[in-house]
Each structure stands twice: as C-alpha cells, then as structure tokens.
Length: 75
Image (cartoon, rainbow, N blue to C red; front, side, top):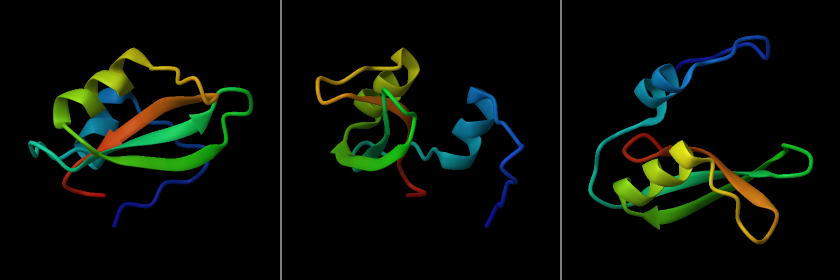
C-alpha cells in the first residue's frame, strides 16, 4: 500500500498510475464538495470511459460536487 504525507501532491499522470485500472466497467468517480473541497465519497458502476472523462474534464454536478478522481481495478 502506498502512503503519502499531506504535503505530497501528485500530478494527474502519477495519480492515474496509482488509482487506475483499465476495466470496462465497475469504475468509481471520487467526489468532492465544490464549496469546501472536502472528500464526500464515490459514485461507482461507471464505465471506464465515463469515469476518466468526468475526472479529466473536472465535471461539476448539480448537487454541488465535482469529479476529483477515478479508480477502476484498485478501488
């Protein structure tokens, strides 16, 4: 298991290596609050393409959250 200190920041390419598998389904999108940035959990059962697209585009949802990451095989 990889552990990071709170001071370490990963770039997108590094995050993909840690969190991403490349399955065709069952991926999760990590959600954060648009107002505070607090981690709120994840929304699963997404296709790989949908999860990757939401994260890459920084999708904002109507419930006040945004896609802050995704994972497939490693969730």
